[in-house]
Image (cartoon, rainbow, N blue to C red; front, side, top):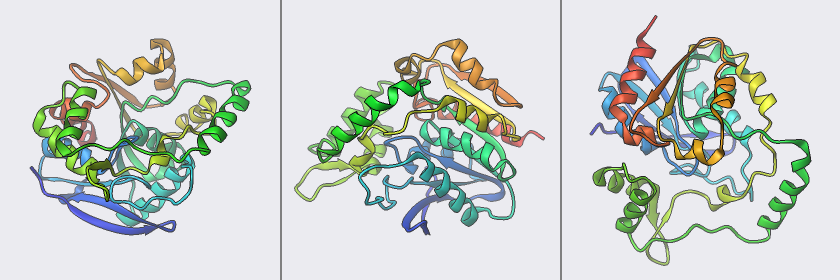
Length: 290
């Protein structure tokens, strides 16, 4: 298992943690984790990539070892601004290779269209966006958000790291035990009152007050100039839960000018946990190609 170091940066008023697996600067990637996840989640993928790859992985605000925002809600544009500031610290003078999973891929996909000159290549792991919404859904969404603000959000406690690892394996039966135990130590922390709680700010659990605007996302995707590797999992429970049809997904992929599409068999939404060697192989070929 490759060893990582922890870097800390002051980013937009918050102390940001960035995990780095040091390698050669010519093979540098920035890895962006998903919702309720942490940077250490990429350990298996980084191991599979090989020692020559120089990998940086931030914990988003309110996750892992990064500071919590202190607000009662988290707003999606802040991730975009945080990424822009982080890249100025990681690689200010050249375009970067961005690899995102889920939430991280959705952030990266928008960023690649907002700042196209800053992105060399983009690897999208299960970052297909959210179901389209309609304006008339807004009043009910705002009302739900206001109601959720009335109750302080909490995350369920676990007796110990073993119970947390058990929960991870129930959520993802493909996850080997040793990987679950590794992740539990990074996803969780000792609670003051005993037991273990997740390192994530419970405020992430609140519904987003803003509707997902597919037309705005598509406008950003259409401005992406970097080559894109879009990787889906063959058995994505997240894609199934969102009820996105094959036609809807194809339309979203078609917004990108230069896209390679791959499906990883025998994997669910956490495909970098289920099949890290396969994902790493696709990434190496894509990122190394002229």
